[in-house]
Length: 76
Image 1 (cartoon, one colour):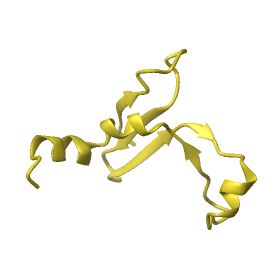
Image 2: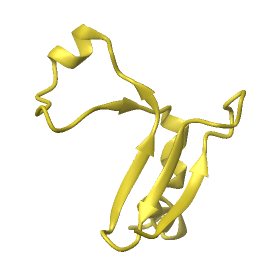
Image 3: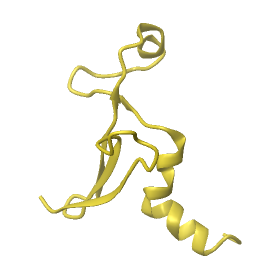
């Protein structure tokens, strides 16, 4: 697996989390974030047993490639 680190949360006090990666072989994102344990939030989601949910701040969206491409072409 060839992981490419796209970016870390620029406001993280420890600099260790959250982080967004791209798996260039599978063309998927891997997101390191805060484990969601809020029962009210989890109850509103349909999460299969083989999946999990992490939470990241909105400011992290800047690291997704699609957003960077859209920023380059604001008319699209």
